Image (cartoon, rainbow, N blue to C red; front, side, top):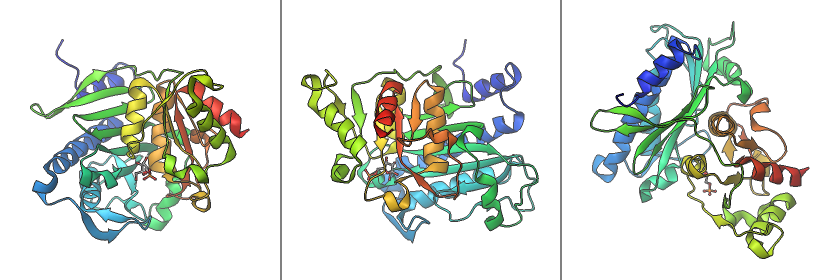
Length: 336
Ligand code: P6P
């Protein structure tokens, strides 16, 4: 059989399994085309004049890279005319983007971090796009961007789809529509995402952890204890040696875990406590938690399951501990 493309996978999920609607199929295809365009823009690097700072700041008060802005524009323009969306929200925009009246409105809400890890762009390290799809609540007030924020504030358990693109040696699209996790590799000659892995499973145990060790003095006691035990290796209470990785691109770190297991931690610490954490709930933690759980892993804040959190603000931050189930459960138990 010819290699399965994203379009065929989505048609089968819709027709054979009834797992998704035609509009959700269209939404995922449009997002995948936007990710292809982002991949091309990134691939040009210095040749495309898109490296470096945009000279602006985003809602987080972070300096925007030119490619942050370019990626955000690509996703907005790709999605606003299709008739499948009611509104969009992005890390790069303070308020949601409602669909202009000249276009039909759909039943879905799309949230995204258009270019996660963009601090790595200028040093040519893998970055990614993260997206999450919710259903727009009946009767939601989308009359203004300010009013529209409320429609997005749904727990992660209500997501109908989530995924990320990794712009690395290959461009990958990793997706769940609630029926397990599948991986597509961009065939640049065909311009199509081709299925290269299905039924992704995260091993329940691991010997690899990912955390920014430079924050160690700020960690809470349970994380101090947990990491200290890992560093003691086979002579310590864990009885085995551990390895460490930290790419500082959540998409790259999470994809490694999706591929061979591991534990990713951006825990609450004294530096980020007043903001509630470092990573954003709606378009980083929730989509990644949905994907990780669909692949047999776990995702908590250290105290609660991420997908159960009731969001209060569109850009709120949370602590994230995700990956191999048995390690997430151990870290979470230390917090109890
Ligand atoms: P630090 C990238 O800026 C990001 O949001 C995630 O992709 C990544 O995991 C984290 O921040 C890196 O944070 O403090 O190590 O630079």
